[in-house]
Image (cartoon, helix red, strand yellow):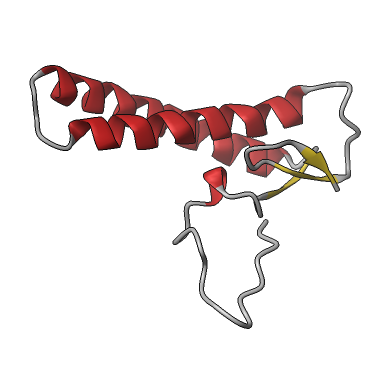
Length: 102
């Protein structure tokens, strides 16, 4: 779920929700957690491919390595919110760079 105000401007992250500070996580939403887990699997695969390209000296591959690394960190943080028993369920939480309870 996104808390960005789209009445004044388009998405500031161009749809990169998992790394956005406006990414609102509803703890206990099992469908959202499953989608995040699936995305994490895909991004880890892309990260491995980018690392291989970087190792072969492909120009620009390091940019993809860094972008995928950031997405992996964010997706792991979101899953961590879902799985952490010390974080209250049925509350909104923000999965951006700093974990903030809603």
